[in-house]
Amino acid sequence: MTEKTYHVYTADETKRLAEKIAKLLRRNDCLTLSGDLGAGKTTFTKGLGIGLGVKRTINSPTFTIVKVYQGEKPLYHIDAYRLEDEEEDIGFDDYFYGDGVTVVEWPQFIQSFLPKERLDIVIKKIDDSDERLITLKAIGKYFDYVIKEIPHV
Image (cartoon, rainbow, N blue to C red; front, side, top):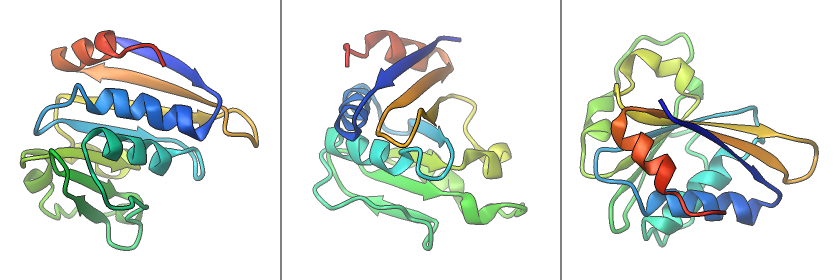
């Protein structure tokens, strides 16, 4: 299991890291994003969208739970925050095993539904600036490869 931490200083650096990761992703790949409110999960997802060729503005799907963005590969953006204490499957497999890349914010609330292979990402805010520590943890061999292939930020 490969793990790597990046130290970024601006929101643009966060987006650039995510964009580089997006270039290595395949259909059916899943990424989880953990971090406190305001840590930069949606900023990271915006960078993924850029890397996947999404033209629409990406924002948090808090009130809709899932947003779908079309790009070179579809981007399925799931915010599981409101699913806390829920055991209901809202059709996660349609996203996890669909034609696109799935990003799950607040994955701890749907842990039992997550694919066995995925890239777990933890974003930690350093202070009130845009400085962050972004830790990537590979769950599965392909994501070991992804982490090793990410060009320098």
